Image (cartoon, rainbow, N blue to C red; front, side, top):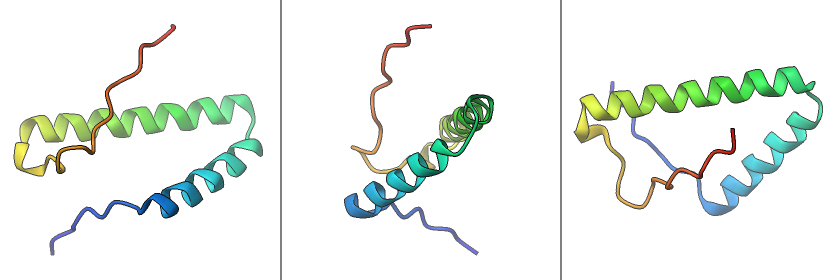
Length: 71
């Protein structure tokens, strides 16, 4: 079985972002930090997989340049 990557529409992304923010408002700081760690780990794993399998790289324009970190 093949799984196609389907990006959200701009409206769908805005709706998802609003739901994510609303859920985050109900979390403690520690829970929110743990969730952020999980998202970062997911991104690291995706990048590692894409580095090993370039054909899995999404179309151009999907990537966002990383922002400078302050920590």
